[in-house]
Length: 377
Image (spheres, rainbow, N blue to C red):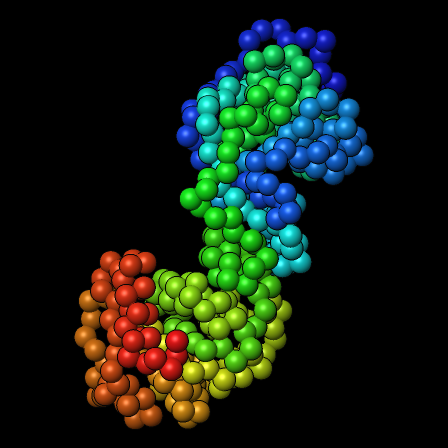
């Protein structure tokens, strides 16, 4: 894949789009610099930098931002992540160090060159290669961006479709066209430090649809252990984890989906110490919790090796509080439906998340849990 040098001049008008005042933009940036500060050019003809970043020879600075948090993170961290069938991609936490995600708002209209269709690209003498080529071609795409900057005096930046997060858009802004004057950090939305433990579960949930996970550290003696069966209580367990992490910190909550380190060969080495050290196990009981079967048609709860069963019994045996969390429109647990070892759950005081629950209902449930058990607070 090769690029020709830009022509001497544009043959005609280019496509324009306007970001109106008040547009929300998300940006990943170093925690030691303001969110609205334009980047000093570092990219060169030899590599480094993003697709349309300025270089030391450009004469201007750039700022890259996106329309959604997923896009901003994908543009910053996932551009070079090759997907392999059956293999989950891992974003190392070390790559997040020193980075924050901030919300910006435009305070004035911004006129941008639009490069989102074949017609848009043809107007600048290019094709899809300009916006879809891999990072090893970025020295050439940056040359074209600098040429467009010089050829289109009204352009305050460029808008294109993110390859890392199709079909969402991302933008690069030019500091010498008053773009910086029309950009401010949103004071009502605090930045997220991407390397902070309390952001780990939020980031894990954001990356899950992309087949990417972070190497989240295992909590040491977590206060709360969220017990759930995959496919039965996933949403409730995730929201409980997030709410508890927000209040107590990520290292105080264990949930297998994000707390087991990547590459762990023996789950027992991680799960059992965590459940043995917790103060409370929250058993998320969805619609088919006690009725889920294996491929042979046997109830999983009857299997002494079933992890949901093992975790509940291990916590109870160590004296931890075990609280059933009944989810949705279903009956409470009945002793006749449970193996003898778990029948105590039918007499345990439970908490309920109603059908269609959201963040407010989860927060209220945690409030009730802590009110009834002040030693957990």
